[in-house]
Image (cartoon, rainbow, N blue to C red):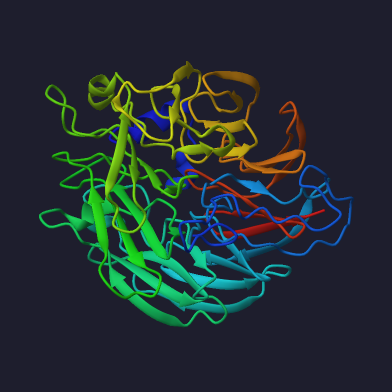
Length: 470
């Protein structure tokens, strides 16, 4: 992610403000589905908006974009016009999506604190500190100050634990298990598992994944891609017992796994991760600039894809690491795009360099997409748009676009986007991308997202959480 800052600043001055698992039914065995989270209240449909003022109960939102496939498809929409429900300042920026466990909204901050809030009122139910965050002045590069909990946590129903990775002073990265009801610390373990690397150059920006009884966490570098780091992913038991397995990209340096949605669980039960540009520029492919298929427990590499342009991608920092893979389960396909502006359609099992089924230009993708059926909404940073992509078994084509950038969430006939450009929460019509409403939400983080649940929309900001309802 060597030139991320340059790319972003060339679009706008967005970073001025920004710089100042489970599925809903957690995957605990091979038969678990990454889209098992979709829970529909009897007598309703996820494609139907609730009427104004309709009471809505909270449904599980236990991981980034609600499901382990990162589909970003909520149960139903929130009626419009939206109004401010409550705001809670938490002392530091909230980069990850909050979670919804019961009626508790769980948010983690760059101050290394985790809060359990009443989702309807914002009142603090519990808060837990996980150490002293790392000051930017003590890092070789970067753009978050202080650096604490950046990746979205994840909840596991089988243990009742919420998992978060805290960076603390000295560049330590620690996985914590907390009681989701009380915030009490249960166990912790270091994820600084790579020898001969500078842990202070590693950053855990990606969302945590819980799947098959494992807590899966990926790492990349700091903004600026400085010093001796390499992209890697870890797998730890949800109980904290046993060995932490890991897979590192076999390159000399870089190839960060930093995209905010983090590792993704595929239909086949395997984990998919995207990596950035690696160190190899002339010789044999070093498995960077790639999508890698891994087993969930030991993270054994199963297959890898890279575009034919991998050398030029590595030279020019135009890699795939800026977005996580998006499964399209009904077609047994995967969609991925990155900084080159090309979208690739892949089989679930890869065959190396150039093994894409099809590709399509038109989206420099950063952050997390959303999917319903065969339609994928892509977050296109350089274009400053959300673009709707229709996916076939061997084809891709664009349908509509909207001039707003953020990680979209689909809910019924609506799409919700936390617009980094304006600081607004934007509601779009799913059928054509036309704007239904804009409402001010505050200063956003680098790759903002939202949670749509229980008749509310929750927006993480540089100061805490803003909540909206109809």
